[in-house]
Amino acid sequence: MGKITGFLEIERHDRKYAPAAERVKSYREFVVPLSEKDTRDQAARCMNCGIPYCHGTGSVQPGTPGCPVNNQIPDFNDLVYQGDWEEAARNLHSTNNFPEFTGRICPAPCEASCTLNIDDNPVTIKTIECAIADRAWDNGWVKPEIPTTRTGKKVAVIGSGPAGMACAQQLARAGHDVHVYEKFAKAGGLLRYGIPDFKMEKHHVDRRVAQMEAEGVTFHYGVHVGGSSPGAIDPRDLLNQYDALALTGGAEAARDLQIPGRDLDGIHFAMDFLPQQNRRVSNEPLGSESEILAGGKHVVVIGGGDTGSDCIGTSFRQGALSVTQLEIMPAPPEHENKGLTWPNWPLKMRTSSSQAEGAKREYAVLTQRFSGVDGKVTKLHCVQVDDKFKPVAGSEFEFEAQLVLLAMGFVHPVHEGLLKTLGVDLDPRGNVRANTADYHTSRPNVFSAGDMRRGQSLVVWAIREGRLCARAIDQFLMGTTNLPR
Image (cartoon, rainbow, N blue to C red; front, side, top):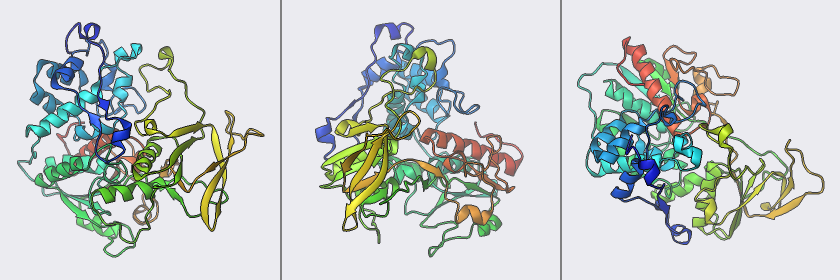
């Protein structure tokens, strides 16, 4: 619980960012860690709550407050305060396979549900988590956990994003022979190809992959299960080769904006734009892809979420003349009503690090059409909307743009190929139908987890579902399981 009177004596003090003018010059991480003393002081602020909502019950009831992976937050805060960093790392890894990922890119619902957030001063849980994970790596405490016995069972995991990685690692530790199939050249999914390096450098993913390989996981890269390209695999063949399949391929069908002018050059999905820059940073060839670059252009990002922010930060680093972000929703309130929202995640105005680098943000805006010259986009024709998203008469206006990035989210996983070939049932939203009790799909030895099952969500939810799916598969194969929830 930290120091009994810590929350009364110590002010909240969180990590800082490098100045925007400096950080936009590179794709390196720019968060400045706290010193050891400051981190221990912040851990001392954790109080002896009667009900620590930061733990979370989201694994049981989605949408409830706190941490989806049920990190034992007061416990590791107390261990950091006491200076027992190694035990804090053991505790943290007992619930979260990849705390260095979540310590960088999780929005920290745990902090929103912290009792001290009633007064807008929550414990800096995310910062402490990241410090524990980084110290564990720096001190060599993170080692392969090699099973003492092998079960003789084989499992194929299709997709190597955070859900697939967590599922594969847990299954390997249970003694199964795990093979991960990834259509791209490297593992990580959106961790690798969606999240920019300035938010999380990819060596964090690489060392986890190395750990998993040492634990017995085999990665197959450039293999599109259910695809039509050379080297693709028919998923029905995998059913004959493996005792169980886990579908963890993510939700990749992007929401489109089908309005006049959509076919003009210069209008792209965010996930056509972001992966290219990540590949440039890692010196991975783009192949035959046409380059999408923001340098010297006025950029408009349609969509106000995290993906839109990633497009903003990447555009500035590429040398965009300006970046404007459009959101169809009205501007949220500057501050939430704690009596109505706490301990749940509140709707309120937030400014991401990328938005703070100079983006202009416009709310309650609907784009009605694009126009261009010589087949290339030059303008967006927009209108303000009311609280029912209906155009407000006389509020029409225009934006100049040479690059438009569509970052309006994802509707469901891609159906063509893998899912249609396997013939698994889909839910009304178009995701793979599987419940959270056993993660079974409509096929008896096929399971699903992460965004492919639940729809687009957080990395921390993907890790949670991957762990639970692994437990369900182990139970299915062995009749019992010792894997943790």
